[in-house]
Length: 123
Image (cartoon, rainbow, N blue to C red; front, side):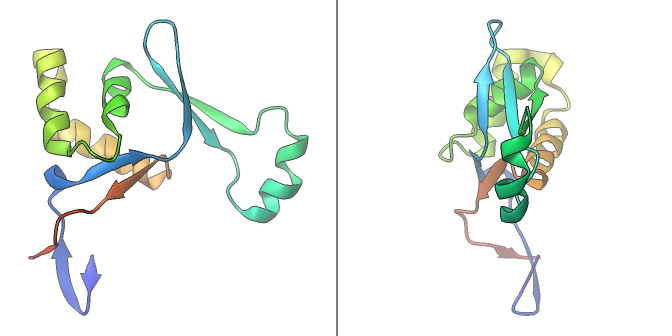
């Protein structure tokens, strides 16, 4: 990320993801994300009313559902890592890589907003 001509980095472990889409919990405790098919105001106004299903349903696995439950805007990624390791043990490995990729994917799809509460450090 470039700010004022200097390369800046964020510490992933200090970021606090916040859910940005509706979701449902299934009977077995898994999460289904309801991701809007369209976000552009024109398409939302004219296409969504005629669609049978305006949202894509994304079913998360057990680990993804667990992480989703922690995306409350106040829990830092560092705490998510600790809790995921407690809950799933060795099945969570490689935990840092797994959480990083999962959160980047969610942010790219606008399913979460990453709260940047820490000051950026220069690289």
